[in-house]
Amino acid sequence: MTMLEGRTGKWEVVIGLEVHAQVISNAKLFSGASTEFGAAPNSQVSFVDSAMPGMLPVLNERCVAQAVRTGLALGAAINLHSVFARKNYFYPDLPQGYQISQYEEPIIGEGEILIDLADGETKPVGIERLHMEQDAGKSLHDQSPNQSFIDLNRSGVALMEIVSKPDMRSADEASAYVTKLRSILRYIGACDGNMQEGSLRCDANVSVRKPGGELGTRCEIKNVNSLRFLRQAIEYEAMRQIEIIEDGGKIDQETRLFDAGKGETRSMRSKEEAHDYRYFPDPDLLPLELTPDFVEAQRATLPELPDEKKARFMADYGLSPYDAGVLVAERETADFFEAVAKGRDAKLAANWVISELFGRLNKAGRDVTDSPVSAESLGGLVDLIADRTISGSIAKKVFDEMFESGREAADIVEEQGLKQVTDTGAIEGIIDQVLADNADKVAEYRGGKDKLFGFFVGQVMRASQGKANPQLVNELLRRKLDG
Ligand code: ADP
Ligand code: MG
Image 1 (cartoon, protein in one colour):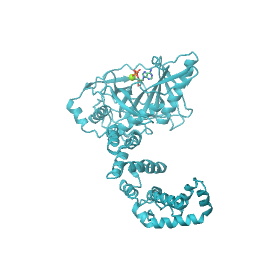
Image 2: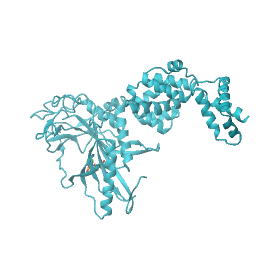
Image 3: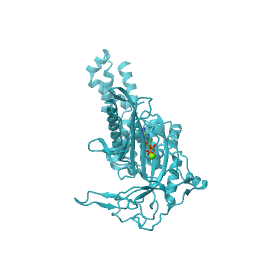
Image 4: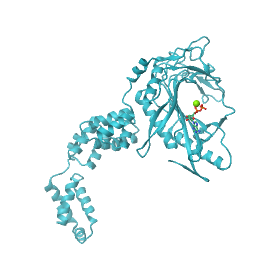
């Protein structure tokens, strides 16, 4: 277990996350206005979204379907009966004066996410609930020195708030949780997971306690919009709380903000100042009643999920938990790998996809969907390695060239004469030359300086421009030097 070290000994960090995920749907939760990102301000606002008097919300079935699909993907209880409630507060970008949300009776109950940890282990993290709610608009303070503007395009867009149990014990686990949740949401197409654009935002509840003690008082850090900030915010906040307690103080339950510039959290409001939202069931909306058939119809739309895929990759392809986890993180990546691995040595294919292709794509700032080397082409390269036409080190050079030019491995090998030399006679010729050129070293080697063997291998490989089959070089050299 990860512990933090304080003056008075070890401390355990306890984290629960509340994630807001924007639902993928053409229209908003209660209106027909478009949800497209990046449109001109206030160009996607219906009378419902701007809260004109007398307008009535009409629930978007697609959004309900997405919430149910998410609940099923999280192995969660689907509540056939749920209730929309008004959450009342004033904010300039909330024209209704309340948000339609769900409170005591959410659409989704308890579930679980298996998070993948660095050592290949997994850990279950409980889901407390998932409810649907409307997003608010956006206040723009940076357009003018003395005025603020309101953009209501986001007003009324459907969000799912996914609340975890306080089951995480480190910044790493919190980050792994968001990563896995994001992966699942993207697999099922319920949320695009784009943290930069704000489609996935997260509030972190953090407390500390002595190992095994009672849960401590928590602080909630609002609106963390990247995994890096999430880690920083948790680590900073945990140490802040530890120092206060060790100095004899106590933690006030409060809402805090993470200042990314300073890398610290600071108080936003205390519990006493906390909003009283005066929740009550929205009189404009009937309770939401789902039929078991509707739920089953949603289940039928779910793809193979990341955990299932990972298990299958380990069983069918013999991959390690780590490699399988990397490959299934994105659906597109998993599909790409399967296309390369089909009918080939899967471990070799996995290696090339993970180490070489991902490395190059990362450097180029691209992803697998616009890879200059297609799965078929990479498969062609893997074939040349598997049948020993080229060696592993030559293959890397060929791959670089494929990445630059988009050409096929076989063409590059042919054109540049890169075929591996497996002709014993040819290799023996090179060896004889190398030994003749280095007679002094040969004498030293025979005099007991074993380490020189590597030097001879290197010279022979160099003389063959990397094309000599390394096993043969080793074998033949041994025979000539030791025999
Ligand atoms: P509230 O009803 O005040 O919103 P919840 O019980 O719903 O509080 O918890 C909100 C979030 O805070 C959940 O993600 C939960 O896991 C987390 N949480 C609750 N207690 C603690 C604690 N002592 N330390 C850290 N996180 C906590
Ligand atoms: Mg709560």
